[in-house]
Amino acid sequence: MVETAQLSDEQIIEIVREKNQNLYAEIIKRYEAKLTRYLRRFVRDSDELSDIIQDVFIKTYQNLHDFDINKKFSSWIYRIAHNEALNHTKRNKNKISLDEKEMDILDESLDLKNDTDRRLLSVQIGDALQKIKDKYREAIILFYLEEKTYDEVSDIMHVPRNTAGTLISRGKQALKKQLEKQPYGK
Amino acid sequence: MENNQSKIIEEKIMRDITTGKVKLRSRYIFWAQKFGWRGALFITALLTALFFNLILFYLHNTDNLWYLSFGNRGFFAFLESFPYLMTIVMITLTILTVIIMRQLGGLYKKPVWILSLTTLGIVLFSGTALAFTSMAQRIEKKTFSQGHGAKIFRPFLDRGMKPRRSGIAGKIESFTPNSIRVRTPHGEKVIDISTIEKNKLPHFVQNNFVIAVGKPEKDVFIARDIRILNSDDMPMIQHGIENRFGPSPLPPELIQIQNLNNH
Image 1 (cartoon, each protein chain N blue to C red):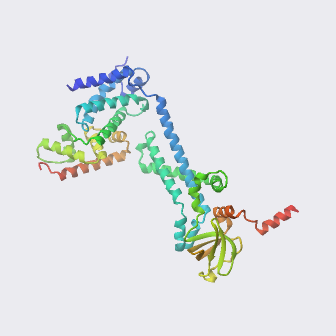
Image 2: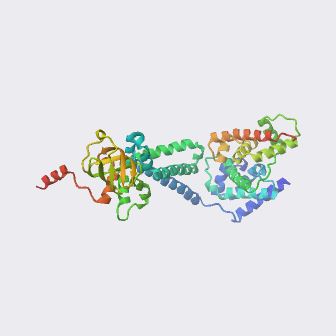
Image 3: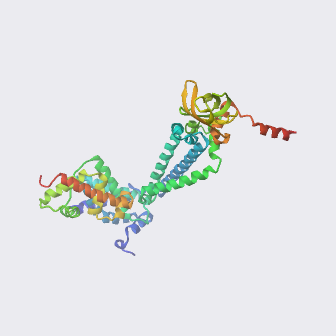
């Protein structure tokens, strides 16, 4: 008997679809924390966040037969979460919140070099992320904060690989521009 | 705290699944969706090719391109007779085809320009291949026939028969040194040729096809340039004239041959 932990996501999905729906719990275990972290950037209210996460897992389960087993499951489930996040940001314009580690990643990638209060910087980056175009924000979050590759960003956002690269680099520029408009500490 | 929340979510979802409240959607629904998209892609690609073929047919069978042979003078008549509606529909269908292609499989990964070029290539190839069939001719025939026919194409092909302000094309009914009476798909018209230098006028013969550029003035079309064409240079104009005035009489040579055969 093969250990569940040794099975790939795609193998688990095949089993869930054909034989054992209980194995879907393993998928929830593997992705719950990741998706919570990802979606928290768009949804601040914890009750709403938990509802959206449930919706993502339910939609994923209902549409399992639509998943192409030869592709990467993580990109597919992130795509569903991405759509839910987009729907949510269209309805609500919440501020994006970043934790210390995420702020460091963005700070480093944007090369901000400043001595301003870290907490203030976190708020400023969150504000600036909120002000740039949705497509740039999505690409920046997926690439820098979720550490997805260009290919995965392309799969999640349903854009060509080169376009994903362009979105990331333009998003970076837009974010920098936005931060220059609001100098730290002012 | 967070672990508790995760456990609650997991338990709730798994309870919904095991009790059957949340079910897997049938694989056949997704197959149907995929077939639906493929069917839509096939239909839009086919229609795009058909419209491209009809545009080629229109350009080849009407007076449109002939106006360009007059140089600058014929440019407005060319613009006036250009099949805009068909071109807009073809471009829209091409865009629609690319959009549908992006919905299929992993094609969203391909840059839009590659998909557009591929679509354009397929359309150009199949549209040109269709030109070797008589499909466009049959569509034209049915469109302008009296009974039930492919009337759906009338708004697209109708432009070929419409009167133009800067040009005219028709069949010579009679002529004088200063004017020609021509039959056009929209009735009999008089072309005033008095403003054209006599040495530049071609030799007119009854039943010849002529095309002219100029401007209308009251009931007369004042020609600035005119030339003679063969009857098969503008078949659609000829069909329009036949639809309005009845079938053309056979040329004298053919009548002689027919008489000889009868004897």
